[in-house]
Amino acid sequence: MSDSEQRRTVAIVGRPNIGKSALFNRIVGRRVSIVHEESGVTRDRVVCEAVWNEEHFELIDTGGLGTMDSGSSQDAFVNSTNRQVAVAIEDAAAILFTVDITAGIVPMDEEVALLLRRAGRPVFLVANKADNAERDAAADEFERLGFPVFPISALHNRGVGSVLDEVLKTLPKAPPPEERRPLRVAVVGRPNSGKSSYINRLLKNDRVIVSDIPGTTRDSIEIPFTIGSGPQARHYQLIDTAGVNRRNRKSGAIEHYSNLRAEESIESADVVVLLMDATEGPTLQDKKLAAKIIEAQKGCILAVNKWDLTDETEITQTKYEPALRREVPFLDFAPLLFLSARSGFNIRRSIELIDYVADQVQLKLTTGVLNRVIQDAMQKNPPPFVKGRPLKVYYVTQSGTKPIFIKLFVNNPMRATGPYKRYLVSVIRKAFGLEGAPVELKFVPRPRPDLEEKKKRNSREI
Image 1: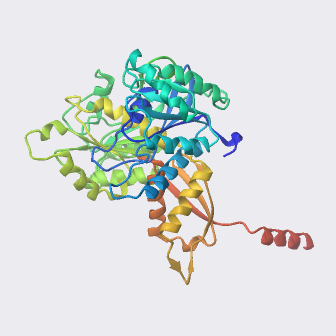
Image 2: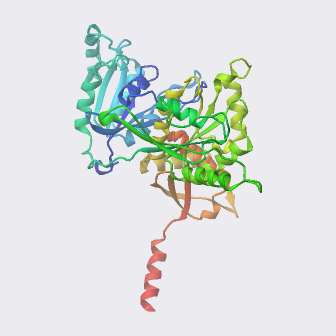
Image 3: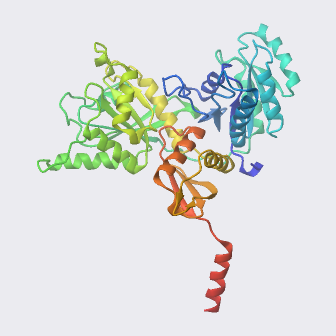
């Protein structure tokens, strides 16, 4: 990537279990790194916006760097490390190379350092777990890796500001500040699923009428909501939609209008929280709402409310989630959260998740990385033959956000089968995360310069 193409992006790289995610969360200012609770579910990268001294930049956490199975060879480890670091540094204007000051230099640190020296990016070595001044002296050992060393403690917020001050000096010039509109968050669900109670819990007061009678909220109510202050303040426009009722011949004008307003709220939102009742499970109406969210191509979070009411049952999250995923497989990309508007369980986590999904739906993927990911995927799993010939992809580029819109220039769009499209989307998600963000692929024929010139000649002759 040329300097002109670089964005204000900082990547955190390093071996496992050294506190990369803790550093990421410390800089971002909120807990973002964990979305799925199940073991073995990892993302190659997490990307969020961060602010330091009123300057905005993107921060990448490369979770799982250098992980390998116990039976893997050293060559397999090095190849895995190369791939992971390459994806991270391709986007980055600066690198935070994270090590464990209490462990000293280990061979894996040296492998990563070798790759970073070849990358041509500014690298700042952060020696994490320097929880007190007595440990700072141990950071001198890392100077032989060839990068400026900063002892820090992500856990205790020690030294993090000093390294960020230096990092910001190396980033490309910030674009002119834009007026930031509030993040529009629509809360949708069946009547009496707890939408108004959920919003009231967020607001910590009764700004919305709450009732046990289904259908109390007839219209969609928009409520401004802010967390924090100053440049790091996060501004929201919460949309409490009327409960969506099934349309039938007996439905009156009020029900029809409520349904229409809920659909309009989905269309106008950046992120949609689909709230379901834990005691009833997903119903036909929940599935129809999910289909509306897919059709509108909106960021989405699945939220299971009233989880406190399952305390006296044998229902667990590990049992509930697979069953729910089977019922709405087309929302497999949406993160799932169990919460209780009544008790407050996971309410703060839901805001963190909303912020995270909002970042994902407007994520910009670097063209070079995107092309490499697609080409690697096609080599690993070649496309099927259609009428005797395979699909060929010549070039890939992102052409939009909200949704993540990716254009693929190919030999023949008709050779892109449905299953293979879904395969490529899954590969893109694995490489970039994009949890909760819709991804749209558009296959277009590659321009033929020779044919274009022939058309021009013919038009001139006419």
